[in-house]
Length: 216
Image 1 (cartoon, rainbow, N blue to C red):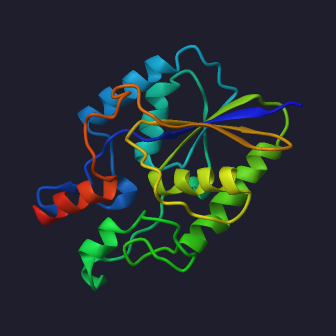
Image 2 (spheres, rainbow, N blue to C red; image 1 turned 135 degrees about the vertical axis):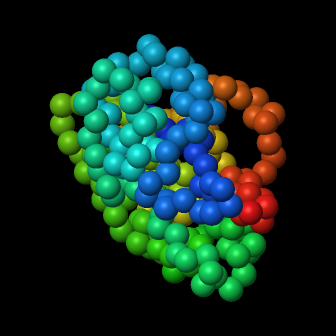
């Protein structure tokens, strides 16, 4: 049996709030810390020969891929972009929306901060993953994407169906690994080269973002 391997890489750390204001989520860039994280992840992956390097096309994913796989031509697959948030001013309970955004097994009609639904994410991301898995002439691929998107892809790899299991924590510049073929295997989740024992925090990413939002 032949299986292809896909490394799922979340982009490095970014600043979603600058000077007390939220940044357009489609124009967020890596911070200096995000670049350092990505450089350490690049060192951990230095021995891997990627046949394809795919990003969501968003700047933070492209910048991470350029650090981790600088010699490769990047493919932009917008199906792997992050969930689109709504307007925070329109969210009735912002704290619950932040803290519960990736908590438990979420139904498809759940929305991300009042924006895009989980079902919409699955509609675009899962066919893209299946298409990649079915394409010939590659053995190892790197997909640089986002926390919500990678949760959806891992959930599919684990369950074989449309599911969104939110309780994976995915640190910036973390690596998850799936092998795809006649059956699918999850090899690793949230491997973080710069913090292998996860001592930096016990908060969810969205809990950290809520704290930043409150401090604006």
